Length: 374
Image 1 (cartoon, helix red, strand yellow):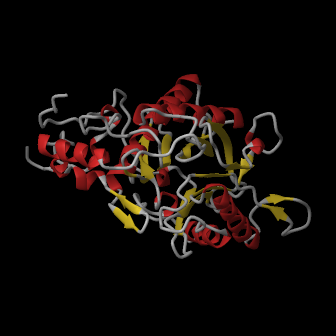
Image 2 (tube, rainbow, N blue to C red):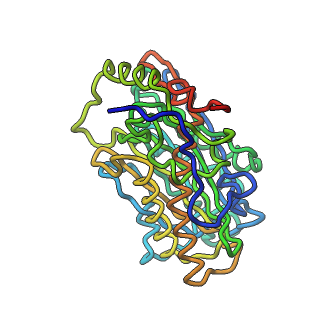
Image 3 (cartoon, rainbow, N blue to C red):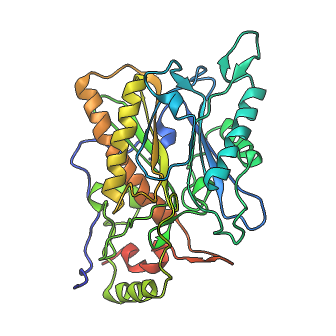
């Protein structure tokens, strides 16, 4: 294969949308995000919580879900079936720790219950917080296989979210993205937003821990054409890696032990796709489903039997319900913000070394991509 010469590979999308003020999920009115690291010795993991601010969305968020991966780890997803009665949830828990990590949602529930946030069940204070959750597989990456996020981790992330918006929202190796890997590179958590023609905002917050590659064989991103200039913050956009860097990366990859196959759930990309437009529960499920198109744009292969890819669709209903044209644009942007968020997760990740190994960051492997003058 002949390496590409250095040239700009970042381009704008074909729509007229622009990113929101923070280019993050916090641009969706009513949403808050909190992140915490697992504190157990030997853990390289964490938890991220997305919730509706009580002053803006006291009843929570309308929510749907779409599970595509062959090895999912989830909680309360049946609740989000449009045929079932509950319309709104109070938080979404994204976490590491595989099936063990689902316990982080217990801590989120406890924190919300202590504040009287939840589904009213009778007397004042008698509430049940509804907290769907999804996990990635990152067990053992910190050196101890059994070290994982717990209810304590979930509670800490929830408290961080309840304390107020975090602007800018930290990306990369934090929260649920702390122990993530994406193909042959360090993964992480990323976010992106877009403002539609009718003023509605669509945004994604994605934990990329994929079996498939986000980076193409030539060192560029599969989703390069979806990126906006604000996604990369590099004058002139991202370039292509030098031939020397590509050769070094290929040599390093050749010495990495093959990833064990045959066991489900060894990877997984999870996250939320959210809007401030008023959507029904069924429309939120569609929002999540189209968000998966963004995973397919950014990750190859996507939705494998060894991934547990799960996306939640959220509406804070702070703007009017869209007409069909408006809803179509929201769905179009859902796939694009998801793809952009995945790339931003990889761009923000940093090289990480533990007793279990080293996961190299894209930025370290291909520094020429970020050269301001080419």
